Length: 123
Image 1 (cartoon, rainbow, N blue to C red):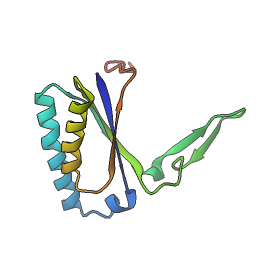
Image 2 (cartoon, rainbow, N blue to C red):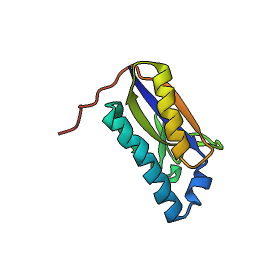
Image 3 (spheres, one colour):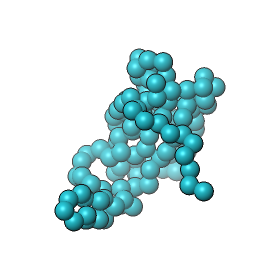
Image 4 (cartoon, rainbow, N blue to C red):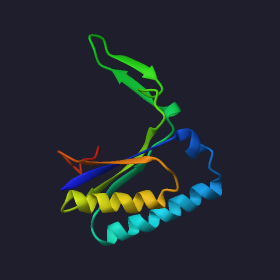
């Protein structure tokens, strides 16, 4: 089963990190990712740009494109992992390891993926 591990945190807190702190967190996360790769559990990973770079598309009678994030929240979606695990408990353990390496107090949401198409790319 494929799982998405969605990483939420305060963009304000993360953006205040020094370059050294950010590099250390990325190094620590990289160590967990390397282990998951060796275990053949790691799928695509993404660190998202700040919400100030986002646009939102509002559905309705007329489609509306808005600058900025879609919601005012204390925590923003900052990135995600995809993992392939036999059980939810196994995915939770992977998320716990990533959370311990993340260097912040945010939230990781673990959600089973209904559809996963890893090799569909534009030519």
